[in-house]
Length: 149
Ligand code: C5P
Image (cartoon, rainbow, N blue to C red):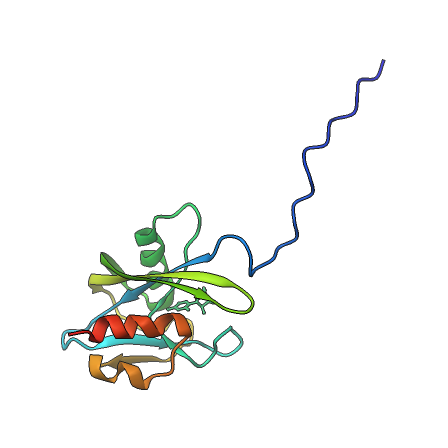
């Protein structure tokens, strides 16, 4: 006495289309040193946007708060323990192959021997020199926000 086969569970899920659907959520931090210079990190070869200078950060995992995601990224990439402060700017960015949303936070305090743990070059940059560094498109409005009077 067989029973009915399981009903189908729904339409097959659509193939991943990185340019559609929810944007990739990315968090980044504005880290300052004692002289007020701001930290930029250079994206390493082999990644998208290689060679460009960015505010350090990365992808936000779904189960994390933005602050927790940023603390984790800064620990992994720079070896620091960071205290995440105010949200500074949100930048929606569409690339041909994907969409992302960059949320940028001030880093209120940090400690630890800051260094590029992933082989990335780092630069401490005075605010008025930030515009000299080629950046991913999403990071450019951040410079504008930091240099507004
Ligand atoms: O660093 P990661 O590759 O995880 O970053 C995910 C995406 O967010 C990448 O496409 C990267 O270009 C982008 N990103 C950005 N600006 C940042 C950090 C990441 O545009 N400051």
